[in-house]
Image (cartoon, rainbow, N blue to C red; front, side):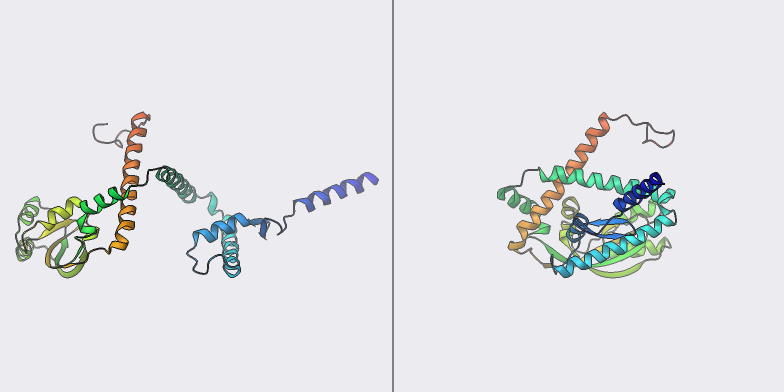
Length: 270
């Protein structure tokens, strides 16, 4: 009997010790799952919270974490965490997180551009800075022609009306629209080509299934304010360096990697 009492006491003690309590670094317990101060801090850091790190903001963030925890528990109870779709997206999300953290680590160790380099960058990208303009465009939007002969004629068109005539003759319907375009969105190479076109000559942008022929009706100078230009230029330089870093790193990794393709799935010539 005495042995039975001891066993019962030990079991009760073990159960009690396993029960999680909302104390210390554990701010809440939801059906046995903890929400810690670290999770709350991460939640606050990821939110655009104008109220800042106030008691009200922390309470609201904690309630959001509790709601999310309950929804996650419900999803698990329905077996969603075991489904092939979930596992595929989980791997993709993990891959994206690791890649982003790798890029962030490399970018944070990159040398900060000097004032001279920033000024040089601005001068070489006039469409985004001193030479920035807003263009009023007249456009024709139409399905991408499949006939190479029609595309050749469109490429040689000298006016928007000529584009319309070519499309009409080919039986291709189009829509006339007007829109504004900020030259800051143009990549350098495309901007240089478009900016040098004679007045009223169209430029055509082809998409996956549609094309847009545009003519510049008028240009409004809209230079980027000097007090904003340096920050914008610095961010653009960082973006370009990050993109180049990724390309270089991928190229080096591919050259050192062993990659095997199933027949029919590799690049041309593989």
